[in-house]
Image 1 (cartoon, helix red, strand yellow):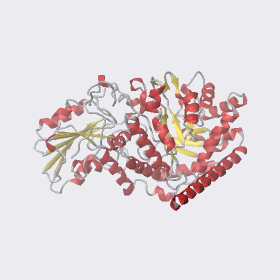
Image 2: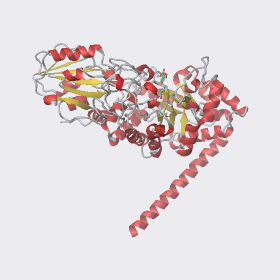
Image 3: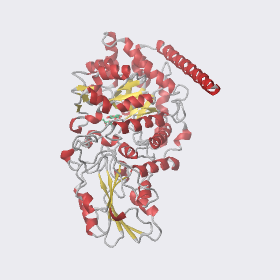
Image 4: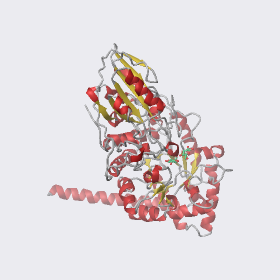
Length: 599
Ligand code: BGC
Ligand code: BGC
């Protein structure tokens, strides 16, 4: 009884303390806002890509720019951690020369680790994290990613993507945790927790940006940036859940999606952005546009700006430099005109700026705007890579294991490793690695390919032979064939046909013809059509896009860890079945959602 009263008192005191802290914060924000000119306010709402402003760095001061991002292809010349940290510090120093010394908030797509930085730890893409079904692990993954982001000064990650990918033709399927809203909301919230830490102002805390609001994974035919043609109940039940849960977890920024909902683009959707998100869901953070996305709204840029801001956007992401269409100077000029013409109410501007400033205070940006160099040194550290390796182990889904081919003994006489992705870190990482689309080959320093990992794991007396085309397995004890997709991102990954590439089918056939037991590892951002290759393989593993830590794959292949991954997608038999999702009527997949063998 006494204990209960004590708890009650502590609870009440904590409540009073938080409300007081909130009041102090609101006051700080209001005081700062009251000192700002309209130009300075509009500057806060302007997010410019580094590429667009690098030739006119003084524009940061001239226009009181509030935010910078680096898109998938914008980067400093020196892409090491130090190069990135120097770039950040240089630009932040510019911002601190503005009249009110309001720091820049810097956004980046660290969507599977801090993936633009050479030498960073690259984690499995979200589809692989989805296969782990493990929120504790995802929290750790996000915390390590946050620490690496902070190592380059930045404090805002355009992640997690809480898309619920309902159609595997979609090129962004791998950015989604899976087809099931329950899985997505659980892991999305875990990511927010790990990224933002206990306190947004923490040394290694980073602001999460939940994206892309809303329905990006539900477009007709899986078309990127397409139209999500579903009724409101479905939109809420499937696509909104990730946001509900992320907001509960404390998410303070949300990115709007390129897609439309029943023909109406989200960037101009007042009902969803203002009534549902800010009203009903009581979202108190700020809403940012996607890359040049408002440009798609209407007949001219000025009306695009008017519509998007009045619909509920607080910050606009602008990739264009002066001289190009719809650049940041255009945006600033036109938004100011709109306010002066009473087409955008000043109250809307004030609300947007209040939301942005509040987050900047909460991040502790005013106190600690510069890079913590101790963190720079930890990018790609052994400790960080161990977390990624664990994520890889837990993400593997064993689809077939006839005659217990797996686990492989470390003491065999000879193991043959083949297939185009056996020794290819670029294929292992997938899109959004160093560049937007990324590519095959040596795209990033550090990390371990699957072939290297196998060599690291077997006994001294085991011979590992290799080829890339499936040939040469004759006489070996087992043959591991690594095949699958090559890197892509966004709309460039949309596919009408998810068959394995011809060279992959041939490699598996050749391996089979050698008479040696065949273990296939599929590197892909989504389920693919694997019959009849599956039938001629003895074991088959869906390895998704595992990232730099290939050692995690060898850990499972050789039995140091048992497979625990379960499918985050229903696995289709053929293209005609797509879209196929758990809960469908006449559900008849090749492997059901949640499937996964072990040993
Ligand atoms: C993507 C976003 C990304 C943004 C910035 C857009 O094309 O849709 O996911 O955060 O670019 O790079
Ligand atoms: C950028 C990406 C962006 C994409 C949008 C690319 O050039 O680097 O960040 O998402 O364009 O189309």
